[in-house]
Length: 72
Image 1 (cartoon, rainbow, N blue to C red):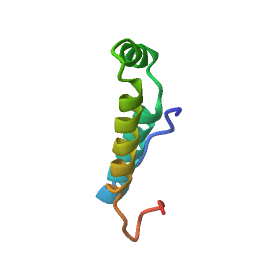
Image 2: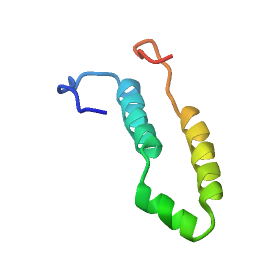
Image 3: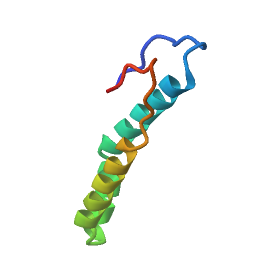
Image 4: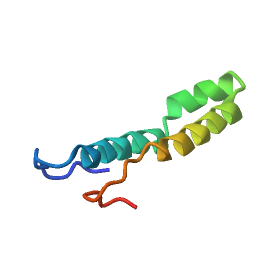
Protein backbone atom coordinates (compact mmCIF):
# COMPACT_ATOMS: atom_id res chain seq x y z
CA UNK A 1 0.00 0.00 0.00
CA UNK A 2 1.20 3.45 -0.84
CA UNK A 3 0.30 6.29 1.47
CA UNK A 4 -2.35 8.49 -0.11
CA UNK A 5 -2.98 12.20 0.22
CA UNK A 6 -4.11 13.58 3.56
CA UNK A 7 -7.61 12.84 4.76
CA UNK A 8 -10.02 15.43 6.12
CA UNK A 9 -10.50 15.49 9.89
CA UNK A 10 -14.29 15.76 9.70
CA UNK A 11 -14.89 12.18 8.54
CA UNK A 12 -17.13 9.97 10.66
CA UNK A 13 -15.39 7.75 13.18
CA UNK A 14 -16.59 4.56 11.48
CA UNK A 15 -14.82 5.55 8.26
CA UNK A 16 -11.59 6.22 10.14
CA UNK A 17 -11.97 2.93 12.05
CA UNK A 18 -12.40 0.98 8.81
CA UNK A 19 -9.39 2.71 7.26
CA UNK A 20 -7.27 1.80 10.28
CA UNK A 21 -8.59 -1.76 10.12
CA UNK A 22 -7.67 -2.02 6.44
CA UNK A 23 -4.11 -0.86 7.14
CA UNK A 24 -3.80 -3.39 9.96
CA UNK A 25 -5.13 -6.17 7.71
CA UNK A 26 -2.53 -5.22 5.11
CA UNK A 27 0.16 -5.52 7.77
CA UNK A 28 -1.01 -9.08 8.53
CA UNK A 29 -1.03 -9.95 4.80
CA UNK A 30 2.49 -8.59 4.28
CA UNK A 31 4.96 -11.46 4.55
CA UNK A 32 7.78 -11.21 7.08
CA UNK A 33 10.52 -13.53 5.84
CA UNK A 34 12.45 -13.43 9.14
CA UNK A 35 9.42 -14.48 11.20
CA UNK A 36 8.47 -17.17 8.72
CA UNK A 37 12.01 -18.54 8.83
CA UNK A 38 11.81 -18.63 12.63
CA UNK A 39 8.57 -20.60 12.32
CA UNK A 40 10.26 -23.07 9.96
CA UNK A 41 13.21 -23.42 12.34
CA UNK A 42 10.87 -24.01 15.28
CA UNK A 43 8.75 -26.45 13.25
CA UNK A 44 5.55 -24.42 13.59
CA UNK A 45 5.20 -22.77 10.16
CA UNK A 46 1.86 -24.43 9.38
CA UNK A 47 0.53 -23.44 12.80
CA UNK A 48 1.66 -19.86 12.17
CA UNK A 49 -0.26 -19.81 8.89
CA UNK A 50 -3.31 -21.28 10.64
CA UNK A 51 -3.20 -18.56 13.29
CA UNK A 52 -2.72 -15.93 10.55
CA UNK A 53 -5.81 -17.17 8.68
CA UNK A 54 -7.90 -17.18 11.85
CA UNK A 55 -6.78 -13.66 12.72
CA UNK A 56 -7.66 -12.43 9.22
CA UNK A 57 -11.12 -14.01 9.50
CA UNK A 58 -11.65 -12.36 12.88
CA UNK A 59 -10.47 -8.97 11.62
CA UNK A 60 -13.16 -9.06 8.93
CA UNK A 61 -15.79 -9.15 11.70
CA UNK A 62 -14.54 -5.84 13.12
CA UNK A 63 -15.59 -3.73 10.12
CA UNK A 64 -18.11 -1.04 11.04
CA UNK A 65 -21.00 -0.29 8.71
CA UNK A 66 -22.82 3.02 8.54
CA UNK A 67 -24.46 5.36 6.05
CA UNK A 68 -21.17 7.17 5.41
CA UNK A 69 -19.07 4.09 4.86
CA UNK A 70 -17.82 3.30 1.38
CA UNK A 71 -16.97 -0.27 2.41
CA UNK A 72 -19.23 -3.24 1.67
